[in-house]
Amino acid sequence: MKLIKKHHKRLTRFFAPMIMTALLCITSPGFAQIPSILNTGPQTSGVATAMGFAPPLAIAQNKNISNASQQARLGSNSQAVLLYNKKQFEQAAKLFEQAGRDYQAAKNPIQQALSLSNLSLCYQQLGRWDDASRVITESIKLLNTTEGEGKVSVLAQSYDIQGELQLARGQGEAALKSWQNVASLYTQQNQPQLVLASQTNQAQALQSLGLYRRAIILLETALKLPPGSTQEQLLTTSKETSENSQKIQDATDAAKLDRLLQKVPASLETASALHSLGESLRVVGNLPQAELVLKRSLSIANQLQLADTVALVQLGLGNIARTQINPRLYTCLAGW
Image (cartoon, rainbow, N blue to C red):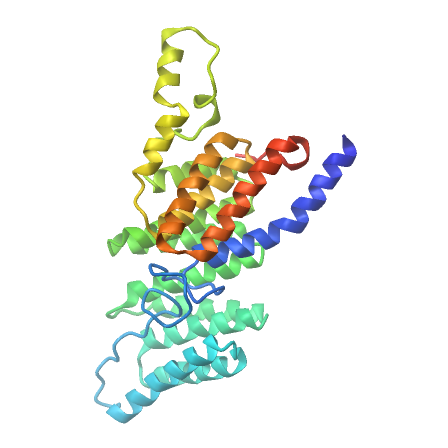
């Protein structure tokens, strides 16, 4: 028994970082395999407004800036994005750094902050964690001391990038707070899909802290599922004969949960949220519910042709099958 526990701990330490990294690539908006904020389109690389770097805002009119200089800065940002897509992170970082200085000189703090946030992404890809932390902190500080069109959107994106960085560095509690800020800002903007994406990221932060049951409660709420609708005790065959127990059983059996899940609309955000919920349910041992939730996630992912999500969900379903074969080896307890 001790040997099994030791082996399970080794497996957890080995696979947990890889799984968390893969999850970030799906639920975090951005280029493929890059942490960023916007992610409402298909899972492809590119510079669409719903993917990739924070989209450039319209250049503010400034009498001291010529049209030529404005276009030069926009061109610099566009070139930096192209270099980033080509994984030429050093060159992209230099251009974003220069763009930040140019926007500072032009007294355009929002665009300056945007350049700094994207510079942080480059530094993360280069493993320059301290530099990444420094510039994203500078970006957020700058945005919190200025006003202007587009501020809320850029601030949300910057907090999201900060959350990804914090989680990557093992700072789960700090990441949770950053993503709570993201959700609050997108709520102000009435962008429910982006609120859901940030709640899914919050759930990942909770999972990194071992708080899987809190993640389940959060995701049930985010997906508008009835509270406790995925809880194990309500979905197993009841041996009690009281009328009350029978009513609970009738109202919350697997068929009922499946009907609830079918009402969840199909989108990239819901597919990711359901995947995260299914994984949390699997870890705490609620296998029948986990399987139903993951199958709904898989159905949405197939419908929307989300290849990365399909692969991760299939991995989760495979883990459930292995757990059922050897529960002692793969089942672990999660905290509240």
